[in-house]
Image (cartoon, rainbow, N blue to C red):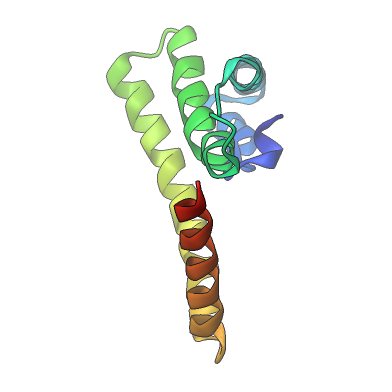
Length: 124
C-alpha cells in the first residue's frame, strides 16, 4: 500500500514543492518504505474499521513524520511539516463533506451511514 491509497495522495507533490525534486523524491520514497513496513506489521484486531482508519490516516501520518526525521529535520520542524500536510488533507475532506451537505438527500444518507456503522460496532 502506498500514499496513493490514503488521504495523502498529494504527499509526493508536497515533498517536491517543499524540498526540490531530488530531496523531495528521497523523502517520499523513504516515507513509502516506512508505510509499507508499518502496514505489514500492523495488528488490525480483525476489524475492518480499525484497518481502514489506520491505513488511510494514522500509519501514513506516522510514516511522513518519521521520514522527515530520517532526513535530519528537527522534531519541531518535522511536526510542523506533518501538521501542514494533515491540514491540507482535512481541508480536502471538508470540501467533500460540504458538497455532500448541500445535496437535498445528503443528511438522510449520512443518517443511514451512521446507523449502519453503529449497528455493526454493537454486533462486535
